[in-house]
Length: 367
Ligand code: NAP
Ligand code: G4F
Image (cartoon, rainbow, N blue to C red; front, side):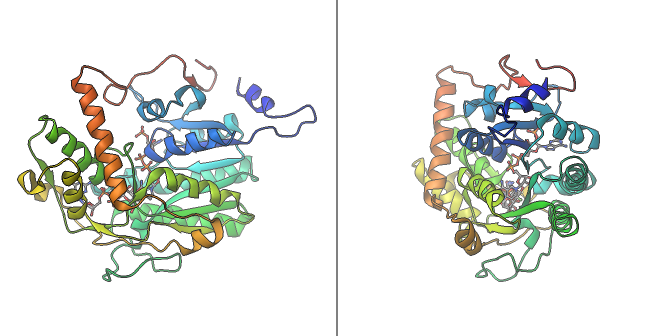
């Protein structure tokens, strides 16, 4: 069946009509926004999802693109499923966004994190090298790889020292380095985006920004009484996710592969995010926020601030949404969701389902 898809992308002369992209982790925040961007650009979009009892398609649904993408079940710990995905999609571009991406969980599941967020990058690169070496490969690297710098004013760039402080960051560092090694050793087109934190209403609820915006909305509407957080002093360079996926695409359009820092260039503390979020809802945060050491990490990065000069100069990429607007977008969207929920509406974001229009591809059958 997927052979038909590959043929549909060719004209009568056998030239390509459409580019095909394969996105791992299409069910995650970035995967969903990137899928939307690539569809807008006319790509045939294939995405990988995890085969679990209740698949997680709420983000694709909420962007209205669920039926527009072809979905392939892939477990990143399983090389054969990666090979199968590459065979099915026959991609021009692969965006490797799939990962165990929650830093806190990586302290509890360090080995699984090493495998899925680290070793799996080699599974992909090796598959591409052996099966389709002209594929352009994007690796989702992270600012967490820098670790703590001890210098709050230092804006980190591609040249700065990487000093991971979590199993997640260590796994990502491996993925980052192996991407460069495959680029240099085998001449693969493999680029790494060192992205600083980027957030949106599609962010997972376990991450601090969405935990805050969701709690503020529920507190405002009388659905929650307090918000329990960990380290309020940590600072992050927070940007708006839909803009960050544009940078990923731009990286793969360059003539030569390279690594780029993508950041807003501003750092704010968790406390500042909290204050602003409650303020937007007309509430005083001090009446609702408590801290608990349950949410402290064995090691935490105190401050991450990025310098996106190279991305600006070479990709023509710049952040557009500033901190205040980001907080507002997130709080207002969570307020809207919970107001609709109170009015009796039920959505895929609180009850994931398996709609029938999906183009789900398995080894042998398209449903
Ligand atoms: P996310 O929302 O957590 O999405 C991660 C994706 O990976 C989900 O689709 C998830 O599937 C999938 N996945 C997890 N384990 C898997 C496994 N064993 N096999 C197959 N798929 C698996 O993350 P995100 O925020 O979109 O970030 C995208 C990528 O960028 C990640 O690699 C992350 O580490 C990296 N990154 C993110 C940021 C940021 O601030 N967002 C910054 C720098 C780098 P389920 O939906 O089934 O869980
Ligand atoms: O929102 P966070 O969990 O994001 P973190 O650890 O910075 O990681 C995110 O960004 C990375 C890029 O730098 C990505 F690579 C990674 O995949 C992920 O997307 O925590 C941000 C900060 C931390 O310092 C944490 O200790 O917020 C602090 N924090 C304070 N209270 C909390 C909480 N974090 C969470 N998740 N929950 C809390 O209650």
